[in-house]
Structures are given as C-alpha cells and as structure tokens.
Length: 89
Image (cartoon, rainbow, N blue to C red; front, side):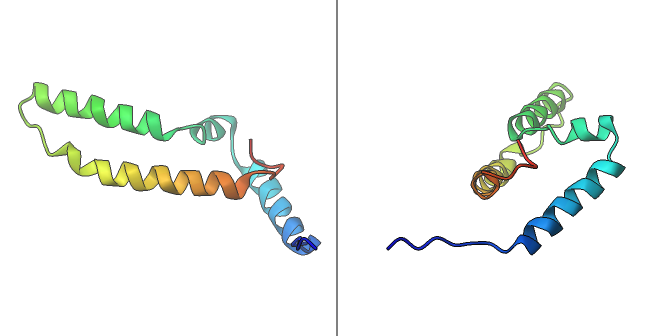
C-alpha cells in the first residue's frame, strides 16, 4: 500500500495568490532579471577578474568558488521542489 501525501488546497491557494500578486507588481524588464542564471553570474565574475587583472589590482576571486558551489546545490534543491509547480517554468 503506497503512501501518497495529499496537500490541502489552502497552501496551493496561498501560493497562487502570492504569484498573482507578484505578477501584478513586476514589470517586464524586472521579470527579465529573474532569468539570470548561475552561469551568467560566474561569467560576470570572470569578466570582473579579467578587468582587475588588466589594472594589476587583482583580488582573490577564487574565494567565490565555494559560494558558487553552494549556490549550485541550492539551485538543484529548489528546482526539485518546484517541479510540477504550474507557476514556474
């Protein structure tokens, strides 16, 4: 006998309403900002590192590696949690 968790409609309604409220206040330009990926952030960090190297004021940008690794793990977890949510791609 498989156990299937059933969620009540109340949390779904709350999430749907929050999503609809957010849609009302976010402009199209702001919505585009939500498409930023971890890879684009890493690319920007590499670009900054190149600019700093050219100015001979390079900082230890490798310190960001643990942050990016943690963000990758967090993103994977969030992606799994959001699977099946009609509000997220």
